[in-house]
Image (cartoon, rainbow, N blue to C red):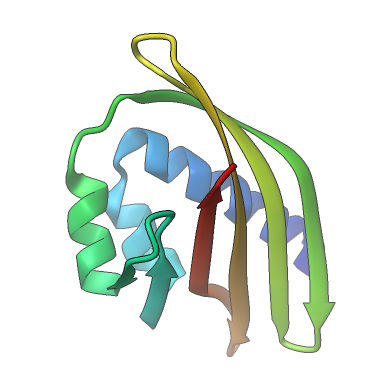
Length: 117
């Protein structure tokens, strides 16, 4: 599988893991020193991110749009827009940038930044 196809799969897996509160997926695919800047501006490390992932939420769908993958040797940036829907029917939009690094022969997410639009 090409690096681009792998990153497309990882991007889709990241979103699926969020929707399903799948901590194990993130444990496997996030680098140990992963950090995330949340939409409220807070900075969380991998253990904090995993704890938050385990918490139930009310988002029932997250549709990806405008996915763009950019490569810089063994680093890749994924930019995308997501349209999400809550259980009560409220909708929202976010944009994010995820940074992946190829560590050995595996791509790992090293950073994420989320902005609500």
